[in-house]
Length: 108
Image 1 (spheres, helix red, strand yellow):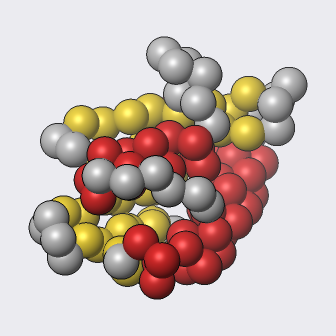
Image 2: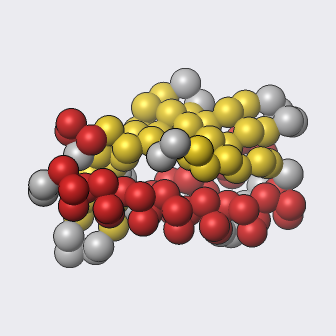
């Protein structure tokens, strides 16, 4: 995938995720922020911060959460960034890590 195509796909994915997180933030008590191409999610209780950002040189979206780094790759058949190890797309992965953080089921 060419750099420009990756940037477009990753920007679209992060913007769509930010809109969903923003809508869900009051229900689940976290604060999303989308700035300079990176998305962060802040939690008060328990305290925590997740970061979702594109890594252009390797054409991946990286998620830093729970002291781990998750590396998602573009899967054309699903038209989504997907975690190869689990098959989760970006939205599913973020819902899962938020659920682990706050201890309740999350719907984005």
